[in-house]
Length: 102
Image (cartoon, rainbow, N blue to C red; front, side, top):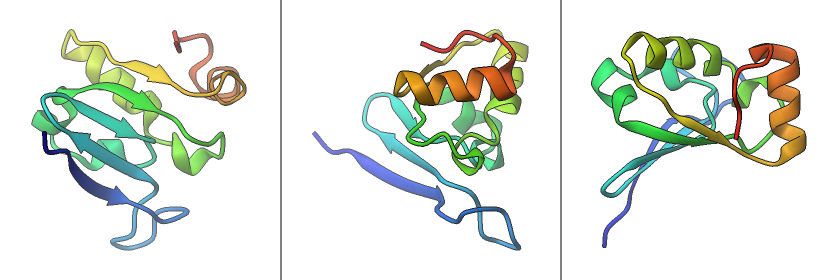
């Protein structure tokens, strides 16, 4: 079994061609680690993502999450968001305003 890692961004913000943290792990499915720059991906790559693990409550780790959720909803798809409860609470309470985070 081979797992591919694609680094979308690993910078603490967006400046020029440097993007916030987002990493894709792909085998048969695609898992995103963080969502700081997830919407810089083209639609076909976004559509493949079924799960996201948010590793940190700092905004650069989840900045694109509301836009990604909007895209998935528009495409009649879902994705599960995972992380420590404290991290999910921060994201939900300060950004997503009650959207489901599991």
